[in-house]
Length: 197
Image (cartoon, helix red, strand yellow):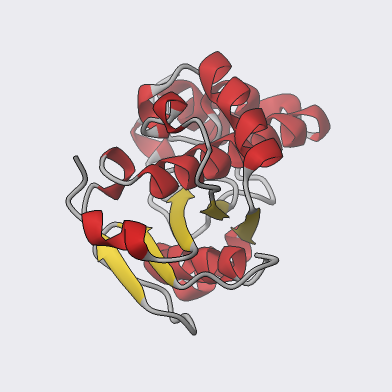
């Protein structure tokens, strides 16, 4: 079923994925997770294919059942300094070093891998192929979405609780009205000048 079937022979396998490359505000977040053999793998899917309600439910199960997991954050000022590509890899590295056990093998979604101390491979479309990466994608997206909702409590001007920092028309209109907030990525092209009204 899986392209990388050989990894099941490993003792501890870690999946890593990130969330938040596309938004113009907020952190980029990554998760690393090691699942037990008896985990209910049939509940997993790419986080983008799940409703927010379903994702929240599975998120809780993963946190309860995982052998260990870590979440890494890279903040907007860091993204502006090192760019979103390097920020995504840094978030993955930070997530990995939050783990309470060292895996034998790591699989990362995408084409690029962070600099880690264990054997690591990149898996294109890993979030639809590899169960550990699917679990990591659910953790990363849910954690980031929750953070954006909570930030909206402190600064309700931009509607972060609805769009989570993605460049929707509503979000860009609010950027034009209020200017950029502390958590906007100043290095991103927000294109507020193209909006009317």
